[in-house]
Image (cartoon, rainbow, N blue to C red; front, side):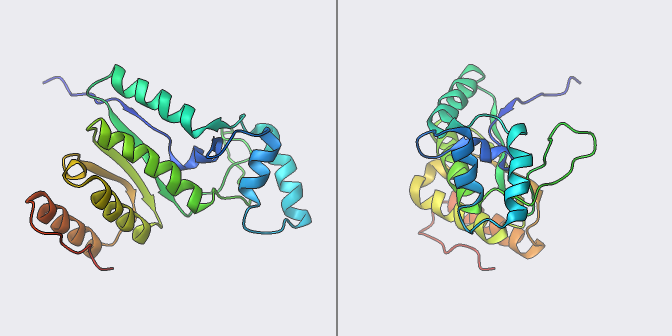
Length: 196
């Protein structure tokens, strides 16, 4: 039997810092505003930023990302969206291509990850594409996002399959999600989201 190969396209949370949600500014401004958005930089963080910046690509606008993603998915009608998601544990490496990656002290802000992921999920629903979702240390946020997507897209959300990859939800939450999704697919009156 010949194995089935499914193509996937999407922006992983580990590279979501390359995406500018607002107008694309200079490379320095984009990463400085993104990585220092929640705090005043210490001298150590400024030194780490100066070391990291040369290895980072120029930022790309979210609109451009979504346009390219739509083109990729439309070019391959069986392709799925993925791997996309949320990750509270990852830190940006100084050199992603190094054999032994040295990690910077910086993480992609979680609110930024959510905007990038939500935009990609909206596109997956529009195109009726299954999704591979990475969810590390993001249990509550992932469940909340599924609830929001169901409220926003209704039955269209329940028509796509979601593959949880690198998933750190508890077995109890997983059972709740499965029960809630099964309940939602039967078009029963609005069921509450799973409790955590």
